[in-house]
Length: 418
Ligand code: PMP
Image 1 (cartoon, helix red, strand yellow):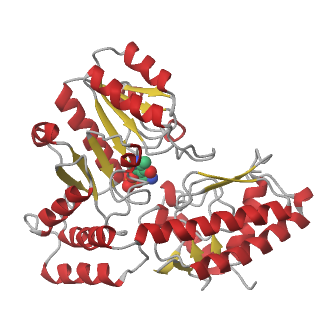
Image 2 (cartoon, helix red, strand yellow):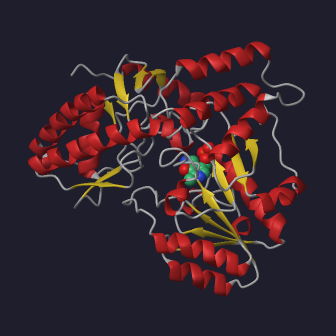
Image 3 (cartoon, protein in one colour):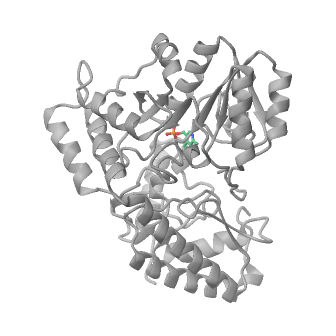
C-alpha cells in the first residue's frame, strides 16, 4: 500500500484561497474521511485517478452520471463530431429532436421531453408545469427526500440564505406511508398541484428503502382523486432500475418524470418528460438557460439512449452489483461485522449496525480507499456497465483486507466527526 495524498493536500490549500470553503456542494469532501481525495485528474471506464497517481475502482460514478463507463468511445465520438459542427448556437440543432424522440420512445408514460442542464432544473420545471396545469400551489414531497439545491427544495440543514417563504407551499409526507400521503391531501384539499416521489427512498445517512407497491399505487390513486399530478424524480435512479421510468417496475405511470445525471453518460443535460395531457401546460411556461440547448450533450444523449435501448448494459450492471453484494455480505459475516447493504444492488448504501457515529464505516472505507477502492460511507453508491467481474474480485480482495485492518483496531476507532 503506497498510497499518499501530498498533491491533493496542495490542491486543497490552493483552492482555499480562491474557492469559498475550498469546495462546496455534493462533491465536497468536507464530511468525508480526511484522507479522501478531493480532486481527480482522470477517469476511464470504472476507474479514477487522483493527482497523486492513485488509481481507484470508483463506486460513485460521479454520483450517478457515469452509467456506461467514463470516456465511453462511442459517446465521446458522437460528442466530438457534434463539437466539430457547433455546440452552443443561436438555436438548437436537430439532434435535440432526435434526443427527444428516442427518450419518449423508451419512457412509456411520456409523449414529450423538455431539456435543461441539471437535475434541479428538471425538478423545478416539473413543479412549475404542475402548478401551471392545476392552477394550485402545494407540492407534496417526502420528508428528507432530495430533489435538488434550489431554495424550494434544498435540504433544511443546508438552507442558509433561503427564506421560509421559499418552502411555504412545500408540504412533507413520509415516504412509503400511504396514510401520511392521504392525510397531507386531506389537509390541503383542493390545493395540491403535485406529489413528488423518488423511485425508492435514497436519503443520505439512513438505510435505503424499496418503495412498497401499496404506497406507489396510493400515490397514483390519490393524485387522480384530487386532480393532482404524480411526478417521479428519476434524476438519481434513472436507467439504473429500468429502461423506462423507474416506477414502471411497479406498474405505476407518473404524469411527469425528471431525469438528469446519466442519460448522456455524464455530459451536462437533464430533462422533464411528460404525458400528453400536460403538453399545453408545458408549452405555457417560460423556462430557459444559456446552455440548455447545447448540441454536444444532446449528441451524447442520443448515443447513450441508443446503447440503453439496444444493449444489455442494465443486466450487466445488475450482475456485477449482485456479485459485489453477495461477496461483501459473506466477508462481513466472516469478519463479524454487521454490514447493512440496502437499496437496489446497483445503487447500494452500506452502513454498519451499532455504528451511530459512523466510526466503523469511516475506518473501513478509508482502508478501502487507500487500497484503491473508492466507497462512500453515507451516500448511496453507483455501479456502471464498465465495472467487470474482475473489478469486483479485486474490490473484494481490498475490502477483505480493509475488514481485517479495522478488526485489529476496532476498540480504538475515533468517531467519524470528532
Ligand atoms: N433529484 C434527485 C433525486 C437527485 O438525486 C438529485 C441530485 N443528487 C437532484 C434531483 C438534483 O440534481 P442536480 O444536482 O443535477 O441539480
